[in-house]
Length: 43
Length: 397
Image 1 (cartoon, rainbow over the protein chains, first blue to last red):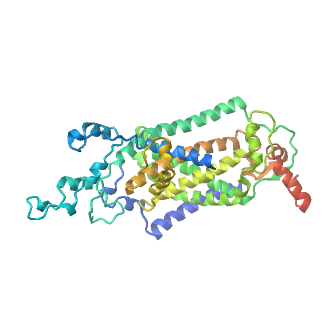
Image 2 (spheres, one colour):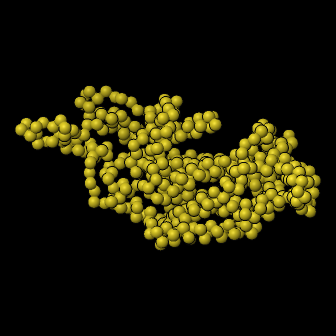
Image 3 (cartoon, chains in turn orange, blue):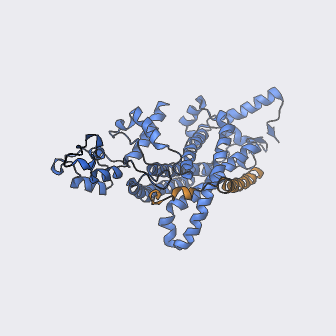
């Protein structure tokens, strides 16, 4: 039971860390990548 | 191995055949090479049209009439030539926007992609998931729960260590979150907006996107973990053939011998590794737009093997715009994701309500010795032999 709860906690930690790392730390934004001008709209 | 390659090839081509229907080379003599009414109708019906002649007709400055000629000022290319070059993405243009896809001014594959995404992808996806749940429910009704046949011993055997269970639940938890948020993203416009409205769906969609993008890293990490933990136990061997020939003993007929993982579990393991790996790869292509080119190189390899010819199909396009790469990545991601979801539904079923004692393996990590003897007899024998050799405890009272 403990490994399961720890795993679920780890999912939340990894997700928060990934978001911070990509957006805050590396400054990456997928939205910006796909909206640099009208030609890159997909729908 | 060859058989697997052929099956995979067939799957890929069948999928791609929906994107590019059989091409024809019509007689365009009546229009002097320009599109005919049949071409226009075919394009409107999202069918593929042989436009190679028009693609090539984009002017040639090298054969331009000299300046002293009455047509010399044209420079070898007319306005229609330029528009054709823009239309077929061969014009030498410069844009102010420095985006990876900004140089593509016209890209008409998007409509075909959108129709596939909103039509067959959703329809067949729902059928796949719905029929899987129905079949499992019927199976439970007909076969009932698979019970431990023999008398319980009261002793347990350690089946999975804490770190293995952590890896499993990291994968399971992230996959469920990714599956749910993926389904919301795919089906939300059609099924959630009509019921809850645009405002409510907007919040749900933004949250789903955040969860899907960021939880994906936990899934990738867990995929690597379980591969390292269990690959050695999941290599196919002779016992798998016997297990499969007996259908795993699901419909009676005793329990075929199995090592730590039986053939059914090995199929699940390799499905998760291969399909999960493919989902992760196409997911990365979607997460980092226009950075990863997966499909053009893959299509080149498929063409080199001659796979499209086996099905009477023309060679696959190997020059794709960045947008088309993204469109293929989205379709592939969704299709493989739903196939893996169907497989995992069966795994969840047999690991919970479908079989007595199975959940303990991933719950506490300790399984009833009688359960282990019935479902993994060779593994229990191995543990007993090891215990006899080393004196190390394998079973607990």
